[in-house]
Image 1 (tube, rainbow over the protein chains, first blue to last red):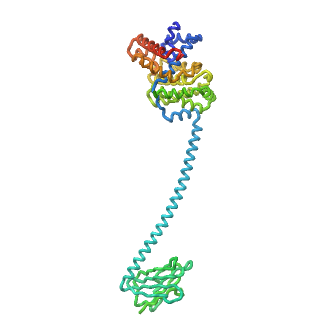
Image 2 (cartoon, rainbow over the protein chains, first blue to last red):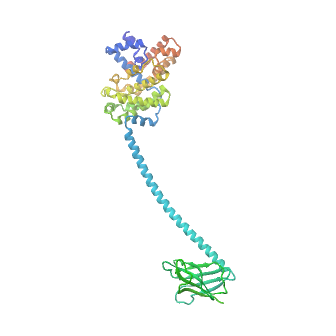
Length: 247
Length: 197
């Protein structure tokens, strides 16, 4: 085969699609370092490379780049980067969670405070409603105590045989630590009867209702003493409040 | 026009190719990243065109770049240009895959690998794959008859020999050889021999 004939085969040889007998002849030339054939094969290779540019481009998936680099050991660097990024994100997440937790805790405390305040308000409202109801009863009688006294406390005691006793006091001194006010029903005969425990507020006011029927005709006075927190069965003198009832 | 963009990008970066080759030979993984950034799209496009299967194309692109990575020490950074070599390896990997899938092992992997030797790609002009030449080839390709285009595509994208083409197309071998040789002659004339020599 002449070089002129072989000229038509270089591209096919470079593409690896030459027939076996033609390929054998080509390789015989190349084995002799034939410069014409060598140049021809290079031309064929260049042609083939140009052909490779003809297909429409297609974007490979992004993971392919990582995959290829990982296969030569770049995954370590990439891995560290990812680990670093992951650690950074984790740290951010942790800080966020702590802040969120604090915020949540703060909000929880706030909510609890509001709940307590609401409970208190509800309780106060209920007490006021009870007091109004108590006052509206036609049988309720009123006794003023402390009037004219130079020292507090002062206030009113409302007595209703069916409903019980309501105490409205002001200028009550704060009960010492471990002490509490206790109301007493003082009968005309016999020992004083315990009628419940209460505290004054920060301003020294108190509204206490002993919500239980009493023996009005057998009671001569309503008293208040300072007692231990658990309360007492007998009053500890002196009386803080003494409101005498009429016969 | 979009199909030229990967080539254009690769060629515009061609100035540093000897430096890139040197770094690849020194086993700088970042150089492989640059190589992929330069030729990854065109390689994937070519392989996908041949195998027409995205998952297989990914595997073969990886195999191509690993082959370049492992054999680049035989490349002369002063005299070589990577583009034709990368595309040749890519095309051959894809053809080898097709042949293994089709059970066509008449052309052995060893035979096809002979055309991938880095030493074959020395003294290529840096502009061998520039945009103008690919455009010229594209235009020239359109001037071929459908039969001529088909046989060249069967050779390049499916790796069929002329005998295999004749069987596939149910045409006499002589007819197929005429189509192939006429097609190549037309392309040579359109491109000008100097353009690809």
